[in-house]
Image 1 (cartoon, rainbow, N blue to C red):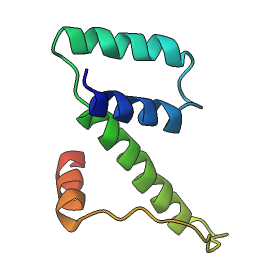
Image 2 (image 1 turned 90 degrees about the horizontal axis):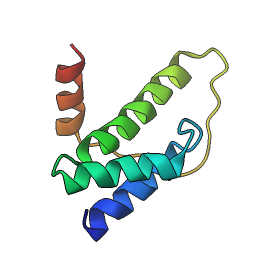
Image 3 (image 1 turned 90 degrees about the vertical axis):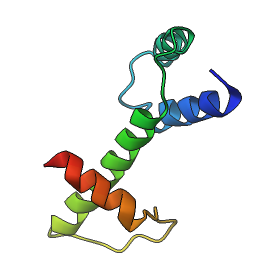
Length: 88
């Protein structure tokens, strides 16, 4: 696992820390996969994006929607179309 992949993995673990019981164990399993040549950051990034998109959908359908200031995730139309095709 290279530096960039390790940084992405750590950032993803941090983002999902509430859903990961053992961050160290999870990281160990990822490094084992990397040694076997079976590791990719793509599924991790896509899972984070999917969670963010689903969260946005939930907010839009909620009756008590409030406008929250702060940074927003910008996603290209191409990526959104790709996600829509996969979810069908």
